[in-house]
Structure formats: structure tokens, C-alpha cells
Amino acid sequence: MSSSPYQGVVLPTTRSRLMFALAWQWGLLRFNWFVRICRTPVKSCAQIDAGTAGVNYSRNYFARYSPDARIFWNLFLLASIPDVQKDSLLVIGPRYETELLVARSLGFRREGIRGLDTHSYSPLIDVGDMHAMSYETGAFRNIICGWTLSYSVRPEVAAAQMTRVLAPGGYLIVSVQKVAEDFQETIEGVLRPSARIQTLARLDALFPELERVAGFEPRKIGQSSHTLAAYLKPEIP
Image 1 (cartoon, one colour):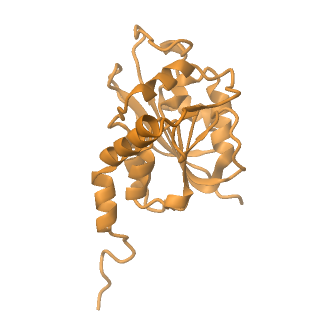
Image 2 (cartoon, rainbow, N blue to C red):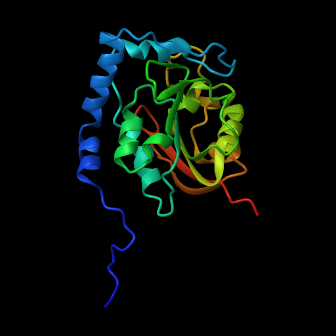
Image 3 (cartoon, one colour):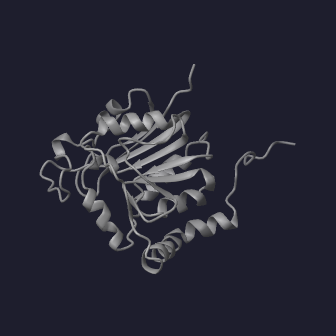
């Protein structure tokens, strides 16, 4: 008897399908519970690194719940890697819990998922700074850093921290917005277009210890163009 072509493939359960379909709504309910009903104070990082810009911009987003559909891009890219291990995941700069809920629906272990942001209302998100993470070396099998490098004026420091806390054999997914030279910044302190990390070449230079296994860089630049890259941290020989 020939083996099934689906042998070893983990099919989605009804629960995971519902979690995926209702992640936006579930995130909204939790947001309203913590922020509106319980009046949970927004936690803030006590010592934000000098490399972090747009601090007030990030905090002001908690006035309303407005997740962006682009968060799927990083999660889908990570989940599509055939040998990805889903035991642990760090999401840097998730803002809301939506990314964490979608990650659970894609099979990442609930207990192994954490978020990291400079401000948060959520018990699922640690308050801290990507330039000075408190996690142990090699703590996460997977890391997602979606668009937060655009808030850094010291991206090389943030990149070194991501490399440190990523486990050997693990994957890092990075995405950044690609903008034109005449792009008008609305966030105080964010690097001008000429200095922004927004190309695959600039991303590769930030992660010399990692191997890029996938990359998508748009030719067109502007408000809706984004560069995505997937990196692998080689196993220790």
C-alpha cells in the first residue's frame, strides 16, 4: 500500500479554524474587556532605549482597536516554512493581541507565544524594548518583527538582540515599509527615507549571522509597499 501524500501533515482542527476566523473579533472583545471594562492601565517600559522613536505614537494607538491586515503576511510566511517548529514564538511590536491569536490558530503552541512592546494592556505581551530584551539567549524558536525596525534609530542594536534570543535552527521573519525619498514622516524621531532599513540588502547587513531563506522586495515604493524577509539561524556545529 502506498503511503498517503498527507502523511505527517497536521490538518487544522475545528477549533483552530474558528480561532483564525474570529481572531479579529476575539481580540476586540479582549481589548474592550481590559481597556474599557476593567480599566486596566496601559503598562509602559520604564527605561526605553535611546534608539526607540515614536514612543507616544505607539501608545496613542490604544485609544481604539484597529489591527492591520498586513500582520498576516509575516505569520503566513513563517507558517509556510516546511520545517518550522511551532513550540515557541516571539512577536516584537504586536500592539494588540491579534497576531498572537492568529499564531495560535496556525498551530503555534499557546504557552510558547509571547509579545514584546514598549506599551501594552495585555497579559500576553511583555513590556520591554527590542534594543535590550530580558529574554535568555536562544529563548525562542521563532521571532516575528513586523515594521518595528522603522521605529529604531539604532536598528543594528535591535538586530543583535533578535539574533541573540533566536534559537539555533530557528526562524526570524522581518518586514519593513518601503517609502519614497519624498515620503513625509508623521512619527517624530523616525529615520528619514535615505537612512531607513527598507531593502533586502540593508536587512541582510543587519543579520550577518543568519541565512536569508526568502525575501520579497517591491520595485514600487510608497505607502503600500513592504519588504519581507525570512532568516534562518544555523545550528551550532
